[in-house]
Length: 190
Picture 1 (cartoon, rainbow, N blue to C red):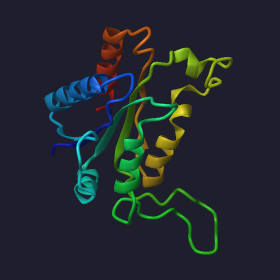
Picture 2: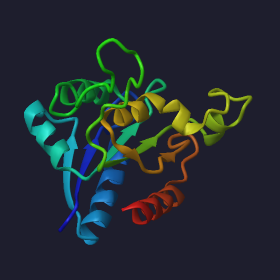
Picture 3: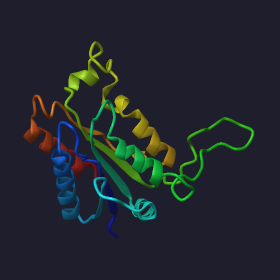
């Protein structure tokens, strides 16, 4: 039986970019995944969507791939809005893991434990800004910078696949190398 992949394309047009690079990553992922026999659905956050339809797409998916640019130290607000709207309610959440009268096990009630997710993002910041102790992010790495996104999916019960990041995409781009790394990561994890 074929597996289903939902790709959330948050390649939003902004002040410095038009979203094309993120759309290109989405197109590459779709091409690879379809060639491997996956059913791929794409939600483009530049387009209006119905929350109930998106919840159904989420429920049908075995894998979620979220593609987005780094805007002001996070993804664009449209991605957060999508999470707020689509992941709210019992159909997607399942509960927070606690029982009345206790605060233990918060965040462990997610019911989507058979699903996997992957975060893929593009940043103008160089990799050293995330990884070096004496640089902007203080050595926390891309997964540290994206912790709220990881915790969102963990809360829902999903398991993490390796994160992809393309760095320095405006000031010092290395697109061909980044595209090759991305394709390798998709092939290795799907």
